[in-house]
Length: 218
Image (cartoon, rainbow, N blue to C red; front, side, top):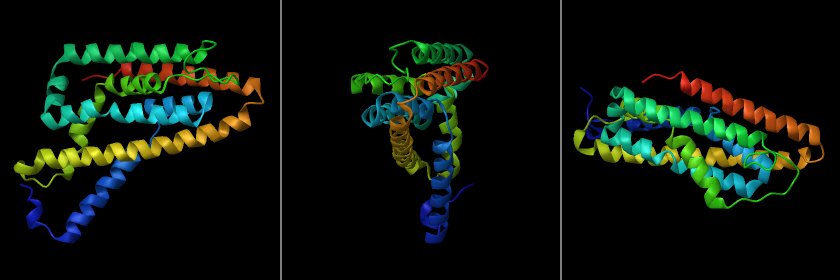
């Protein structure tokens, strides 16, 4: 049985904290639907849109962290009907984003036209990307417990703290992706062919992510 924090040395606590930060950073940096969405907004509409995308994707994590903390992820994992319902809603939404990347004037279409959308709409769309991924709850249920102290009385607070740190890393990394994409936009605006190719590429990536999600099992 794992000992509580009060029985650990400062060096042990520092090592566990470092391991968690590295693990979380690797997970956040790895390209996924949120990263692709933020890049698409940065390339299509600039830095401010990428900021809202990062905000939305970050807050889309909250329901999954809450589910993992309260043990609801286990219910999702064992309920095939619930898992399937959320999964197919996510698949449909990713295919919708793929269509928006191809559609002229679509929300994610990358073009030289200076289009602006409401920040709240961009953030809401980003939040839905993560909310409709049922694997995230199960992922957090698997990721966080190994770094807990083992003290049942503080487990909820510890998971909440680690969740907040994970969200902070998510926002910071996604913003860096968005800033990079917004900077690259200035170099790409002169080539309609490149912009069109990017739009098709984002559509293909979202479609591929939808296909991968469709194959997921609880």
